[in-house]
Image (tube, rainbow, N blue to C red):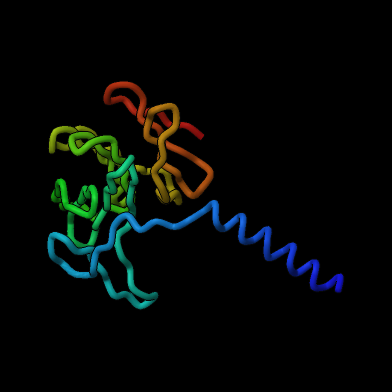
Length: 160
């Protein structure tokens, strides 16, 4: 009897918790190289799809590296597509006219479709692993323990 009561209590708690956290599909894209598709690369370690995405309100921005583009969607419809010729690994999206890419150990800042800043990370044995925002400035994670933060204007500041 006690065992049944414990199971019932766990079942009720799980039901209440999962009812509060529902999953909602906002966008579905088939694999492929077309405008309304997401790129997929077959590699020895397994397939690789888009490298990053951002959700802003009802909009989804997808870094589709294998198709060489950044795609912006709302309500399942493509709003804009920015062609990129970089092999981008991560994305910090502000607007369609203002974004950052992490590519081949470089931070690239684009405004109005033009590259504004290209900052190469030359610290020995350090690999750029991710992009974040910190105090409204882009931050590059290096080997998960050091960071490079562009300062004001075009002058970067190194931070460890």
